[in-house]
Image 1 (tube, helix red, strand yellow):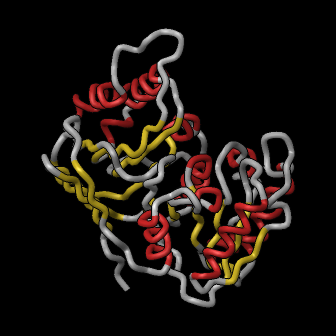
Image 2 (cartoon, rainbow, N blue to C red; image 1 turned 120 degrees about the vertical axis):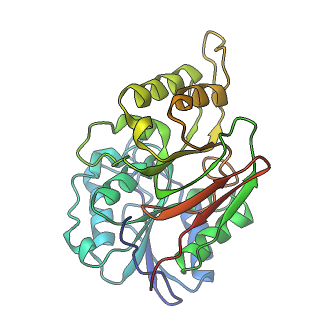
Length: 303
């Protein structure tokens, strides 16, 4: 289990940076207004609204903004403005020494999975949650879960069970993020440690055969035999490709997991959908998977 950064309080300062894709300033302005309504002071990275091809500025510009937010002792949380692509190009350029002296919350999902994995390797928890680009489209409950978690109120999440679930009760350190990013980071120095973990993943607009390829990798590499349980979030807009794939996303995943006798649940309300409930990656959770419902319960930190 990773170290939790200090929770926020009114009057704290937070930063918005863009380590991945470019973003329109209107999203930053709207998110800033919401964060200010929570009683926070907001700093926006110098290059947060820059554009350089598919990136929010050059690697050097994006890294400089992130480094400044990490090093600023007044900043207590760093919100990544959006996903896209680019985090992997700067994650190892950063110096985490000052950050580790006084960890702060790093918030985001999708491409920000890269930072979640890096921080887990450093022993610091992070927050898989809505980003400024999504603040206007996620559900009220999702935004409130981000707010309450940042301010220290950890909430359980429950949802309707899926017929594809494998029932059971499991407890472990929650890790994960975007499935394609997890696959792309196999073998990197900061890859997640999957042993005895609760693995969560979600994804967007991937081909079904690609998901199957990933699951076969997870099976034959020993990843699935090491985890305690698998939690599947939003698998949004999955595609068949030129040829019709002959299995559903649930069947692909369940067939890969079935030999390992671990609990499995689908439809975790987190991912590229309106439901994107905040999850603390690197923190211990208990998941109770029953026929009618699923409960994901964060273990309260010891003060």
